[in-house]
Structure formats: C-alpha cells, structure tokens
Length: 243
Ligand code: GLN
Image (cartoon, rainbow, N blue to C red):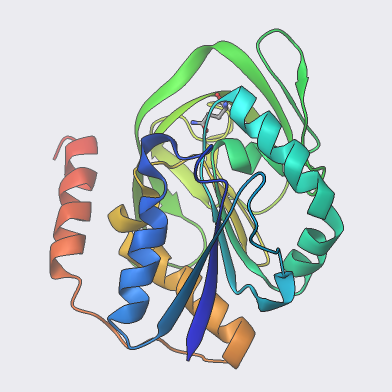
C-alpha cells in the first residue's frame, strides 16, 4: 500500500515546526511498510495539484499575512478541494490554516483576512493572544483520551461542527465554550501546534487509518511500540495537571 501525502504552503505556514506533522506521518507509515510519496505545494510551485491522486493534505499555521496570501492562492483550487473533502479526503489544518477554511477571519484591526468559505466557521482576533501549553480530552474516541500541544493565536473561532475535544488546560477555539478544534468527515482543524502529531501518536494513526480506509478500505493498522512516545505524552499531561 502507498499514500500520496501533500504538504501545502509549508514555506509560509510552518510556525512552531508544524512540518514535523509530515515527518511523524511519514515515519509511522514507513514503520508499517506503507510506502509514502511526499509532494510539496506552495505559491508558484511547479507541482500540479491533482487532488484525485492525493490521499492526505497537511497545512500548518502562521501569521495573519501568511494565511491571507495562502488562502488567496488556494481559492484558485477551491472547488477541487471541496470535492476532495466531500469524498473523504484527509486534511489536517493547524491554527491559521484551520481559520482559513472558515467564512471569515477579522484581524485585530477588524480587517477581514481572505478565507476559503469552505465551512461555517467565524473567527475574530483579539489583542490578547491565547498562548501556552494546552491539554484537550478528545471526543473522537481515541485512546488515550488526552491530546497535548502548544497554542498561540489571536483568533477566537466559533462553529457548530463536532469539536476535536474539550479543553482541560489552556484556551482552545475561543477561550469561552471550552471546545477545541473541529472534525468534519476526514478534515481536522486544530489550534494545537507542537508539532501536534509527534506529541500525540494516537491521532497520527487515526489520520493514517482514515487515509487508508478512504483509499483501500483498510479497517485496522498494525500496532507500533509507542512506549517512548506515550511516556513523553503522559509526562506532558502530568505536568499540565500538576501531578
Ligand atoms: N494568525 C492567526 C492568529 O493569530 C493564526 C496564528 C497561528 O497559526 N499560530 O490567530
């Protein structure tokens, strides 16, 4: 089996090393004998965006300016991207790229940053940024239940989609309703940088399995010895819970 994995705009949206999500997916696939073909797309790249031959898309986070430039470019491919998502295409969007899939994002001056209007999400920025380590209890059936990461965003995001989980420590979507992220089909948006996936191998596998299910109807992944990864994850959980 093989997965075609596209990292998009990582030269512009890669704050807090979000490209580490690609490294994590690549290694966890290779350790299972799943071949990975990496493609990288950004503004002006020669890479053709053939969504029919993409199995997973990863996009990181960045500045308001960066996400505005990226969404303006990605708007050229909006309908193909919409079909990709509606056909179960896997996409992980971190922070600014999560916001970018919404209807609008008003920056602290009230200016609207160009968005894709793909999902009914509203985001507005406030002057005091939401910064720090974050602990979330996932609501998508993952074990362990915990997800850890680091957040740094001015944006407050509101929507009625299923959240990725409930905030136990930190801020999340908007520091009000205690929800973090969103899940719709195989799209996951989250404010968790870190990079996110190496700190949470269980959701990395969730994303890999979704891509394999969508392409090959695979129902189960071979398990890996995640002792070191889960020990590191749990030490962060304990630190955040002051255990
Ligand atoms: N520019 C957005 C904000 O400040 C997202 C930041 C990020 O991607 N870390 O909310």
